[in-house]
Structure formats: structure tokens, C-alpha cells
Image (cartoon, rainbow, N blue to C red):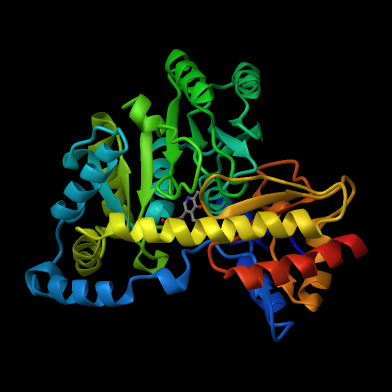
Length: 399
Ligand SMILES: Cc1ncc(COP(=O)(O)O)c(C=O)c1O
């Protein structure tokens, strides 16, 4: 399969940056998913559909429409104020002190990544990223023609010794560090408390802007809570979203940023899409208000059980030499096959057998490790997880 990091077939009249655009990998995955009538699809990244609070959202949207026609006009570049107040209160509950005026509502955290890049990056600017990291962020970084400085990870998250080396080895000081410290996508790994402090110390010393992307922080199933980076340092830019806690189709996320960045981020947002959809912002507010904590308690129970089913099935079915992460939260388990195996090359055979996943190589900023793959457990009931891993075990054993 073609990795999405391959340059798109740029045409001569396209901007130079288009050479870094990846072909849409979903098209390739969809074609594979169609190959089996009973496919187990481990490629997802959404909350379980059966947990999406459809009735609650429907009722909330009726409340939202009560503000029409005023809410149908232009307005609220920063986002619906009651929603920002709700977000500020939720962040306070996680140890992050932020004022509603320090928040900007975005079209998902993907737009948060885009707006930060829009504000901070000139073509060629260096940024530090975990290796591997979130594929969608890599797509945005490519669009801004960033030079990526990969920082390898281990089971405690981004390696501080490697971060120090990357900082020392960079001819131009990097503009920012993009990190997903909690239940990382794709690895599921969480940055330890001591490394969080070391990372922030280094960032302070070097004047490095830290961008913390935290879609999964509220989805912890066991283990001890680790404070978000933003709770330890108010200079951190924090990206949040309702995509994993309510539903991604709503496209509602937010940026919390230091005061000096807020007004320029508003301008960046205006230039991108003027402001968020105002009825949806109200809908999310009315749906989340007085509901989200209970909803998350239910969701955590469901996801814990699915995570456990996936880990147990891997323990039973994986051939010797296969390793995997054991996440305490989030949506993903990261699998490392024996050296020399290629998860992308195995994918067509896996699809024939009725199982698909995302090849890990797609998530590397540079030097992809072909023997890795990402498994999602949030979207599949336990019996499907068991069946999918059984099929996967056969494919790996045969590969
Ligand atoms: C780390 C990370 N950041 C951002 C996003 C995008 O989320 P949103 O739907 O809020 O744009 C995702 C979605 O998978 C993600 O895993």
C-alpha cells in the first residue's frame, strides 16, 4: 500500500507546498474494507457509535435553535461564550486555570493544529514532533512546509534525552514542540510525570513553545492521573476537542493559549473560516451541560472492557516476537511485529481474511518503522475484537 507520506502527484500550476500533500489514505482503506463481507475494522479513531448521545444532541439542538435568527448571523469569532465557560470549568477540574477569554472554539482540534501553524510557522521552520505521531498533524505540518525534527518515544512517552539531542543538533532553534502526552495517538503511551516536568524545564530554558494536543485525556480507564502539561505551565498551548468525548462529526474543539497568542489566533481563525458554526456550538453546550461527566463515566466502562478484550486477545493470539503497548486510556494499542516484517505489505492479505488496521509507517514523520501497526478498540464490541485478533494472528503467523 502507498504510504500517505508519499508526495501527491503535484501538477505544475500547484503551489510548491502541494508537493507535500499526501493522498487521502481513507480512500485506500475503504477499498480494502470492501474486500470482505464481515470485516473487522481496527482502523477507527472515533467514539463508539452506540455511545453517541443522539437523543440528547437532538434535544440540545432544539434548544440551540431558540437563539435563531440571531445565532444565524455572523458573530462570536471566539465561540459561544457559555460553551467557553463550560470548557474553562472542565479544564479547571483537571487542574488547568484558564479564563473563557483565553479560549477560542475551533473546528475540532485539527483546526487548532492548523491555526497554531498558521500563526507560528514560516516555510522551512523546524518543529519537534514525537515519532510516531498523529497522522492528521503531519498532514498539516506538511501544508505549512515545516521541517520535522522527530523525537523517539518509549513506554514512558517522548524521550527527554532524545529531545535534548534534537534541540542541541538543530541549526535553527525549533519554533515549537507538538506533543500528545496522554494516551498518545497512535501509540497509546502516556508521558510520565517526571518527564513532563523535564520537558517543561527544557522548553522554558530554550524559549520553546509547547503545543499539547489532548483529545483523550478524559478517557482514563485505570492507573494514576497525570496532570496535563497545561496544568503544570500556563505558557503551554492546549488543544481540546469534543470529538472523542461526544462525537467527531460535530467538529467542535478549542484552543487555550497564553494571552499574547489569543488575539492573533482570533485573526488566524477569521482568515480561515470566520467563526465556528453557531447552532452546533450551542448544541454542544446544551448537550454537555450537566451530562458529560455521567456520559464519560459510562463511556470509560465500555472502553475499559474493550481495551481489556483487545489486550487479552493479543496475549492469546499473537505469534512469538510480537509486542504491544498497554494503554491506560484513549483508543489505541500499538503493535510491533518482529523486525523485518512489513505491516503495510501484509494489509491486503489481512483484508482478504477480514481484518484491517492502520500501518504504523503512516505515523512516522521520518524513517518509518515498517513493522508497526495501530489497533483501535473504541469502536468494536468484545466479540468482534476477539475475532479480529484471531484473524490478525493468522495473517502475522503466515507473513
Ligand atoms: C491526537 C489527535 N489530535 C487531533 C485529532 C483530531 O480531532 P478533531 O476531530 O477534534 O479535529 C485527533 C483525532 O483522531 C487526534 O487523535
